[in-house]
Length: 332
Image (cartoon, rainbow, N blue to C red; front, side, top):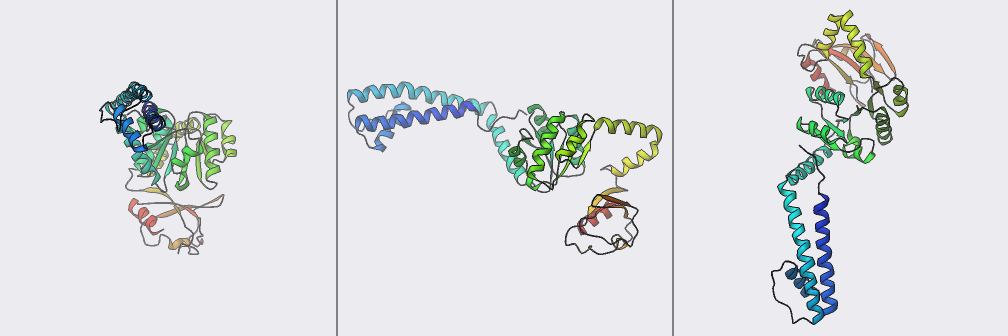
């Protein structure tokens, strides 16, 4: 699928020229022949279209010269407009324009979604992981081939430079749950992070770093987390060589297809009835859910005791059966 602008420039120019010809000719008939505005417009339209509907009254020599000019220029412009519009429809661009309009409306209605900037090798993997978890997201990329691949994969897309605040707004950043920038260029990731942070000071941002020296710059730009695919890949290879069973267990827990055990983040919302309640009451129904850690502010408490009182904003790292975890999410 080739993504095109909503209105090709050729059709826009042709329509504008035709409007100018009709407007100028109408004014000229009023000035030269003294026609009323309606008669002048009628004379112009019948002359441009060469249908010939009769003159309101006989023309003067100057009016006849004007009519000759309107026929030559107007009919040429009208023919060009019709051909441009026909090419627009026959080449399939009209269908793509309708599709893009529907896509923009769909994205505008999205809430609590992720904005994924860049659909290269890393971005495509991120998209597949989000789709496997049935998490809503929109892909932002300036590369048409990347956008075409994302659209063909069934994802919502926005065409444009993710560093542009207007493009981020069109991706629904005001209502987004978070932003992930996985562009190949560190400089672009920094600009995207800065733009997103300006628009949403409290937005959760995960940024990709290709070079080690880019990590502190991305954090300074406002990224909450910085990920280096090469560093993570190297550490994972070492872990697989040294602790294969442990890595396999973690992969199973984190996998979207795992039905036996799921690892999930659960946040205590403001005003929740869980505020002030001890941790032991959170999953005291024998569902098998275990709270492994609590993140409060910048600190992380591992294996918290059951007497720990919950507070608004606490992020709980919980593990348990998928159905039990989803039930807790609904209760929260």
